Image (cartoon, rainbow, N blue to C red; front, side):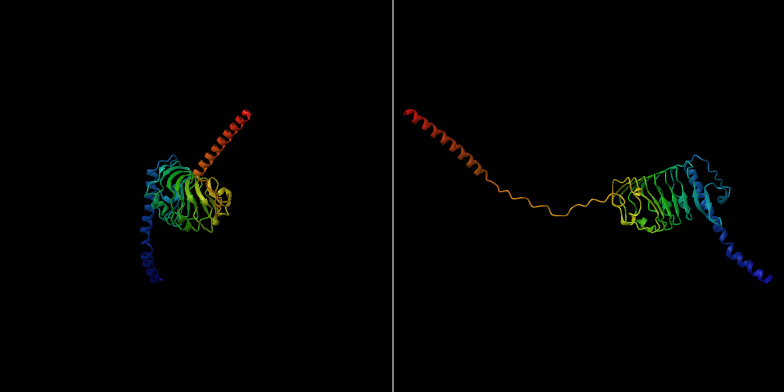
Length: 278
């Protein structure tokens, strides 16, 4: 038995212990990314993120995975964050699954390192002041994406078609323009594109959603909104034939009429003269 134990212990040490430095390094990296974010973005409510305290158990609004090796969730709604989100902060959390910064005063362009996090599943950034072109999120694991009540512009990225796990997509009250791409998202249950500048016809795949999902886009048509107008393609009728009259003929006709009048007048005078002579 002692021989077996003596064989197991070295195996355990060689297979498990090398993992610990990596785990600690990843968690420390996540901690530093969050500290960088908090230091760069002013906020009204105090976070009490103490660098000496354990991230996974004592930091407000932060959640970790089961073995507490990575940060997987940020839940910080209504903290009073003001200003842009800096690059190389939250975007470094490459195990992040939930990002909730809704109902703050964040603005500026959303950094591309955030939209590129491949592990994201739930993104709630509504009720802020983000602007710039509507970003294309690359995580194929996205279940919910809420960017409503911001100032995003540009068109809806065609890449949204690849987000086949989405059940919620809310883009209402932005400045998004252009046509809606033919999104065919089998799990989509909640959709809202209202109060933007979208135009064209609503794709067949999205006509099952209610009228409230599309209102406030004056140039948008098709079910469930009013039908799109159709322009008749029938040929225009040929113009009727009107014979033209030469201006010289008109002039000669006018001259003839004048000559006839003078002849009649002279003849009448001659007749009166003869009658008087009798």
